[in-house]
Length: 355
Ligand code: SF4
Image (cartoon, rainbow, N blue to C red; front, side, top):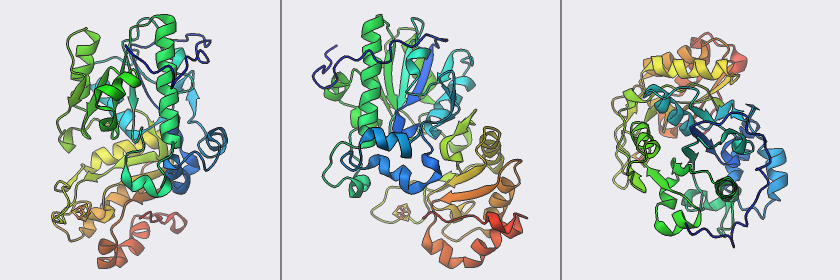
């Protein structure tokens, strides 16, 4: 395979690590997504900024410190990576076969039996326009540079050790790499596109492991929101998805109709996060006040039940949200004031708004 050595000179920096326990499937994400950014949304957004802002070494040392890990296994991971892990475990893969590795120690978890290394990406080539305010001249971003460093190290390892694992890219930014030029340039074997990829992942991974034909670029079908597998480990930022879509139907927007996850699944994922030390839970929806709504009007009972149930999970100290529509907030201002106390939460833990 043609690989651009002129862009990524062969590195053996991570080849000296002792192989602790190789896994058949190793999941990971680049360093810019393997950090909780000290729970500061502004710092997290800076991963899409130009590296001319601050030297990457300094940025990652102070702003984007690595997630905690044990023997290279990440204790916190991006939500998408956790979903992939959960889909594989639910489909029958054993825990001893699948691991989420930190990018710093990933080489220690790869061995001759490793068949797949899968990278979750979000904006690997600086092509998401709404991040352009942070990078107006489209220079290399922290996200991009850390993705390239990761694939460079993986490919160097594969060449040096003569391993045969396939490099798979999936996640919200996978579409940026779904062309033969970039796949060749970054030594990527398979790209899986689709926001709801959980159903397709086990099927494709089985094919790759068995050496059967698997398309280089796959477009996965949507998964029903009720079938989303429950995460098995902590998520950076303690994030829990509560719904997808929007009921406002603006003419220029293709957002699907709102689907909300069952409360029991949301509580279960909050519990997993709490057990993994993520005591601040961030509920994720296009508009958190739309939870349980069948139209555009706020469903007060459902929203209060959501906050009340999550805040009562053992160990949860605070419940945040992203995002919230100002239209919903203006239509039901008392809901925001009432939600913490109605659930019995300490007033000091009033949810903060992240619009
Ligand atoms: S409110 Fe936003 S997400 Fe909803 S339909 Fe309009 S543009 Fe799309």
